[in-house]
Image (spheres, rainbow, N blue to C red):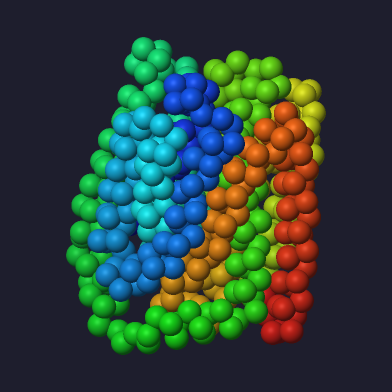
Length: 396
């Protein structure tokens, strides 16, 4: 089950990152501005905001097997339609479809882990599946301009069609994996449990102070992650790198993030979870500052710190949410849907705002300054979570 979720999340990351290395040829061929491309990179998050809560409820009602298969097919369809786009509008619509399939995957993964793992193993399992998007991003960044574009005679639609085919294959593998007897028995047992009305569940969850604060923090986490992730290759190219070199350097945070994903969530036990969350916010702050410098050692340090923060900020926050008293395994899908719905407000605005700031100022300095401010606010949020934990007599 963990492998199946990991594979779908790898397809998720591959589809998200698939456009970033192709920004230059796509904007040229479709006659788009940087602001329009920023909108394209962020439009699926706008759809995601509206779809995440219904998708979380769908997961809790029909089960992860059917729902995650549907999610995999939708992200594959998004990839195929991107390759067929002819202008800004059609590309926006194609990318927007990912905003329906994506929340099924990102909300379903924590639910699967909460069902099949307990204790420290739950944190480790979350760390394992979150390496999927990192590996998907590495594949996209490392192979697009160095291997696939030359192989396909610089025809970028063929690259996107390859990614779409891999997503459909991943959905098929998940359907097989999740069809074994143990998974079906768990699905039947969950379906037999009585369920309160969905509005009542949402009302109960949003009454919890820790849940409300984590929803606000999720906006900053995703604004930082998605804004920097989508524009990183272009940011590096603006410093004078070639497209191929920028693609390789942009894989550094993902490579580092794989190790961080496997280690950090497992260490984030209740007694030190908020300390780790605060440390990750400090790493994000340092990365946004160091990216202002063009020196290779400082750039490498920035990308390493970014990789550690990006790989685990979201994971530790979701782990905190799922284990908050009043949430638990039963409402993990709905709670995760709430988290990602709020988070994608930042996920959608991050790429758009960085693109607009680039057009307005002619560079990325203003955008990096914004990310620094977001990291500082995340630290404030962690301090508030600690206050709530002390009042409750336990770490949330």
